[in-house]
Image 1 (tube, rainbow, N blue to C red):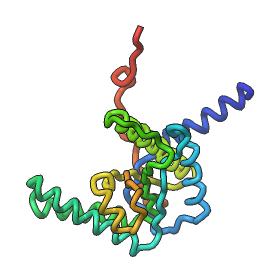
Image 2: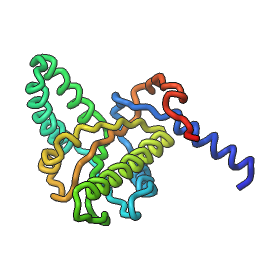
Image 3: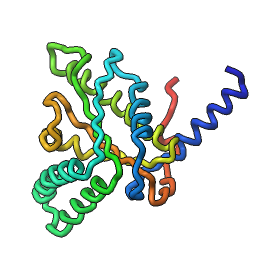
Length: 210
């Protein structure tokens, strides 16, 4: 790799990395099957424990499936927020906003973990660590999806709601019993690109140990 090529590659990468935003409102324009296939394909190039690729991605395009998912998760969230003591009108506002974000997104990519390829341990701590490694790798795969989407002019937003009610998500979408939903990514063409949010200065996030 030449120095010129390296600099060009770094500039292109930085443009994608620094340009990505969390998008919550999309145009109704459809997203092509080719683009969805391409951005999901990029996920499998993320690192994973033992090269197990313990991820499964469920694509939702049709409104009935998105409605089932939004309604099922909304019921669980309503119960939780009510138990937390939130006022009924505030509960409804939260649920309505989440419902809109899901059903109005042209595409939903549900990210799930599976145990296939992971090691098994006799003690709970090491088994938990193995599961955490898989979850870390899923985060990397999701980031690949979001960056690949942005490079194609698409917006995305990561929503962690399925992590709080995985069994509900599995039942609502009739997924295999060994799928463990971790989150979902909304995908579409943004109504507008959000402005970058302020980031903490690096001295607060990184330091060297002598």
